[in-house]
Image (cartoon, rainbow, N blue to C red):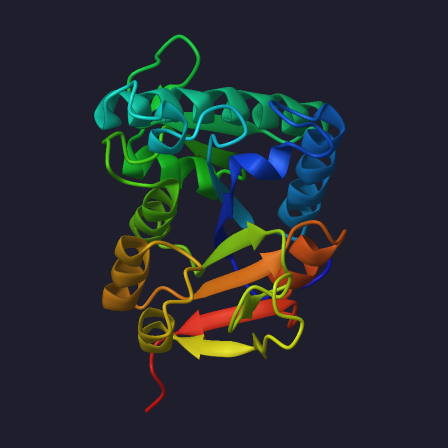
Length: 241
């Protein structure tokens, strides 16, 4: 078994990560690929928990266009995360990985309720735990849910999988001269308005000393390299002494 740098991680996946080549919904090949990489990390001996967004299906307020009230739109987005969670659960279990889906809103026929101690026990028993439905409250993003769950389960680090290879001073697609940061502090993220996660999530991590790693999920093997502690993206930590 290869050595891992971390014993327990919280991996944040956007719903868009499951789109693959599709314009909407799920690309099952991409779901399978991501599940395969999660399985490889699990085989390193890492306890893995995941938070998944629902933007490939419904993005809450962004999709409601003032037709649906904000709270209702956010609940619809939470339900979308459950679809993604069940898809990833199925893909992982086809690979022989034991999983549990825990939901922040009651969906007892397809998932467990979110119970912190139970989630930790599942991780200790070697199960991958997938957290669905965000925080269970409207007006909070799945980034905030990821930060909250990472701290509740005592994760060593919060890993955010994206479509870029780290955090840049500007959008590198717009400005090819944008500077990539290897290391940042929470304070710099907020002051520079870098937008890697919403301000509530950053504040939660800052107040509780939870490090964040941002890396490119589209590059095969990056998730495994990140779990081994290799420099594959940008790391956000507390301000240096």
